Structure formats: structure tokens, C-alpha cells
Amino acid sequence: MITTPDPKGRLRRALRSLEGLSVGDAFGDRFFTSPHVVEQLIEQRALPAGLWPITDDTVMALSIVDVLAGQGAIECDLLAALFGARYRLDPARGYGGTAHGILTRIASGEPWAEVAGEVFGGTGSMGNGGAMRAAPIGGYFFDDFYQAADAACQSASVTHAHPDGQAGAIAVAVAAAWVASGGTQPAEMFAAVLDHTPDGETRAVIEQAARLPLSYDVRTAVSALGNGTRVISQDTVPFSLWCAARHLGDYEEALWTTVSGLGDRDTTCAIVGGIVALGAGAEIPPAWLASREPLEAMALALLTGH
Ligand SMILES: [Mg+2]
Image 1 (tube, rainbow, N blue to C red):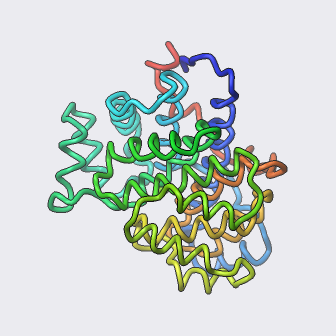
Image 2: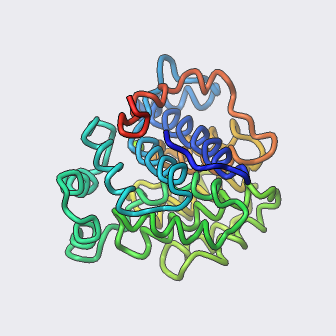
């Protein structure tokens, strides 16, 4: 990785968020198995056995962190090139159907803005893919929520032209920035997020999440906010923010609550892990880190120089 100087500790925080995101992604993905096994694991707080492979959430977040490390900003052309290169390196990382189409075309050199704008009959994607990879941006711009929101919007636009696909990324990045800047009160997290998230369905459901008591059962939250089953920003980001707000400062509990909501569990856990890991005291348990597939598997020769 080629990096710029890091006087403010921005990159350190982005990498911390990436650890939380990747462990969450890999952890959550292990729960796509028989409902009986899932129920048992959650009830007993038992870690899934074996190595936990990372999925598209982590792979795309790696490209975001590479761009931030090298440029100190989101440069969309470079980000698109890295998304395409890593997709080519290993397309079997659980990308969604639309993502396969978009990334195949980007990897073959088509302009990302054209490709992203053409899907879903020209409305662009409102999928949760922009949000799933956005938390490290908040870690990086922890000292400037406006910059975090702007960079998150740009990073999403490479694949998600629909405003809701971008709003989800903004909301997640601002939540992460708020945690990284030392925030501890859940109501303040929602206030910061709502200050920066543009109008639309994602924002409307985040408003509901902000009003939903954190003492409620996770099943109640799922029925009110969704759990990512529709794989769109609107039904993924509000629930993830609610889970993160409920367990600020406790990485492990945050992830158990999130995975117990089922739904798009690798992505909800990636979002929550990327946010909560930035908080003071929210240590990622060493056993969890050791279970996650090493990230080197998706390193790019063009960045490492090998
Ligand atoms: Mg995934």
C-alpha cells in the first residue's frame, strides 16, 4: 500500500474501522446456514467454527481504504479501477447480481458513471452496497463530518447512482465519524447522522430508528426497520444504526445483536462492526480477529509493488 503522511491519525482510524468491518462481515456470513444451527449459535453465543472468509463488503472496503491511504480523498476513477481489479481477482465473493453486471463492465474499462446510471432502467441502484463499505470513510474523516458525508457520497456513486444508495453510505460514514470523534450518547449519533443524510426513504426510516427505544427486542426493531432482506439501503442502514447505537463501546454485543436480526447479516454486521470498532473500549476479541480470513488474500500487486 502506498500511503500519504498521516499527521491526524486519519488512516489509523480508517484501518481500525476496516478491521471492525471485515471481522463483522466474515462473522455475519457464517450465519447463512441452517436456521436450527443459527439459533443454537446465537443462543449459546458460540463462535462459528473454522476460518471465516471475507465477502464483497470487505473486498470493496479495502479499495476505499487504499484510495484514502494513497490520495487522502476519494478519487472515483481510481476507486472504480480498484473495484474492477479486485472483482477480476476473485468474482466469487458474494457480490449481488447487479454488482456482477456493474463490476464486469467497469473492469472491462467502461466509464463507471455511465454504467452505474444505466441499471434499474436508468434510476441507478439503491442497494446497500454503498453503505456496506462506507464506515472506514467516517474513520478517516472523523474530524470533519461534512467531508465524511461528501466522500461517502462520492464513494457510493461509483456503483450506486440512486440517491438512496448514496444516502445510506453518507449515514454510515457520519455515524462512524461521530463514534471516532469520541461520541458516546446514542441520541447524539442519530442527530449527527440526520444532520447530514439527504431526504429520501433511507433518511425517513433512520428517523424512525432514532425514535425506537434501544431497550426494545431486536425482533421489534426488525419488524419496524427491516434487516436488509431486500438488500437495499432503506431496509439495511436504519436497522444497522439502531444496533450500533444500542451497543456503543461493546463490539461483541453489538455483533451478536446484529446477527440475531438475521436478514442480510454479513452486510449489517459489516456496517455495525465498522462503526462500533471506532469507539473507546470497543475491542475486537482476538479470537474473532484470528478467525477472519487474512486480508492479504485480496491485496493488489499494483499497490503493494510485488
Ligand atoms: Mg457480502
